[in-house]
Length: 264
Image (tube, rainbow, N blue to C red; front, side):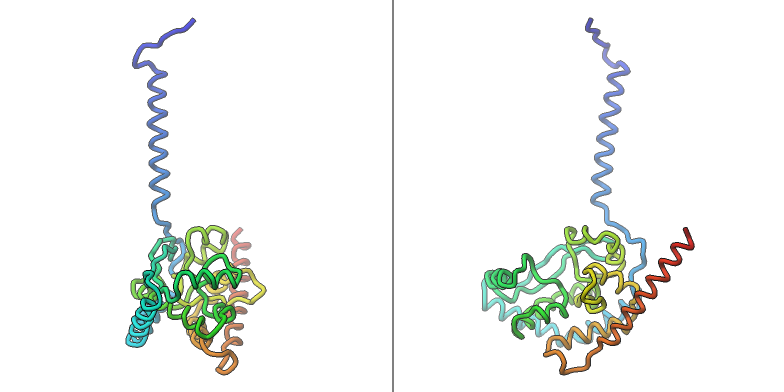
């Protein structure tokens, strides 16, 4: 027998409450998904690293700004595509920012170069790696000039002169435990792969850099990146000092693991 419940019955009220609850949960999920992630680690280097970035960037501004404008003018003559580009990247604490770059080569030439090299995407933001993969000095300098607009990101506080390569959300997801180390510092104009050994995983460089950071390490990586724009082997090599930084990172990692075991 079919029984029709009166309007305003308890079942109807329960259904309305469930719909209201579902709508509230859906709105809450949307708010949480759009909210910025706040890092639980203080920014790596703090005021000292930030002052180092600002001083060097401002002092060298009369050098890199004209070079960037000249490179932009040459690029505009070479191709009609927009020369200044922005890409959304993830910075300190998970905050998204617009990462600037300069398109030196025509889009078709860039795609062809990646196809010949067997790459599926643009090269990593690492000048040391760029040196080994560059086909010619012209390509090497072209990629270096393409990163000059990122110095505006340094002035804005989104990036640092030295730090992890700026990653997108898709590139950040596979990092797993290394994600916290990436999010604890600002991405760098110069990458930090020189701090890790060649046989180690790519994500390990973020952890090693965070555990071994010092102002001297930043200076060494920056100098090595500038030196790599010329032929290797002709200038002073700081690799033995970077090896000390790697050893210091391993010691700090062991001490951190011991503290966790003792705390457990």
